[in-house]
Length: 318
Image (cartoon, rainbow, N blue to C red; front, side, top):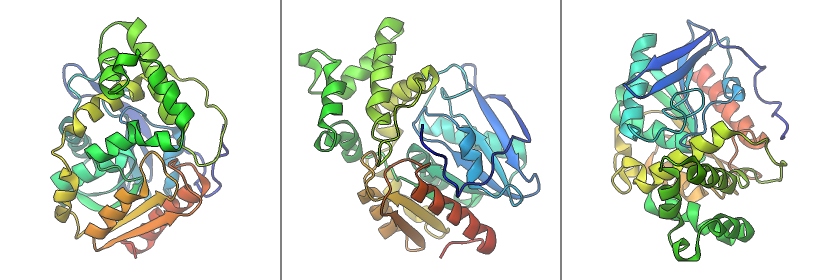
């Protein structure tokens, strides 16, 4: 287990938490942390399907911010776990708006990393009037190029991990591992979807950090959520048109944004963060020279906290 960065705020318990039924199939878990009268923040976790961690509450000064966190459909404490039906980006955006209305929030700072950055951009471009600004980490624009990198490109850095990943498949299916894994994970046979989900989760999890952090304890919740939902979303290009988030970035380019990116992120390589920054004149790009993909790497956590602290002081980023 990796050491928790010292730059984070102390551990904190939610002011309240609960479950919100969003349709006949899905019920999502939510929690509220910090100052009920503070500046509202929306926290968006990664994956899709990774769910919340208690450490996610700690990027924000609890005296200043009112932080709303939730497990997206099929993730964490939301039910049913790993459910991919009725699960699209557009429906997640609708869920966010339900939460915003439920909490009586007019505008909030939007904070998200990895898939959370994808969802943050999609939400902002749909509801720019609801956003105060953005703190984004490990940018993933959900293009075909990035998905191909996630599946195949990583072989250049982790050939043994790639071989292990495709080695779970019969030789005739290894040319298109995404389709092969989707067929297994989105079926109703646990003898097929559990091994596939665990293999997918391991394929991603072992390349999150730049430096070795040891094996994480196995988690059925994480494996099923990440395996099923990441493959489901990637197979559908995130439910976007190709490069949609970049095409519509002008809708939010007037808002302040800080982008935190690990230089050696092999899950979401820096080119996407650079593209976004170039298209967003008011954004600030902070490359962490000794960072990989993980939000809880020391350099990345330090920059994320610095961003929320700067927004606390100035209401913007510079």
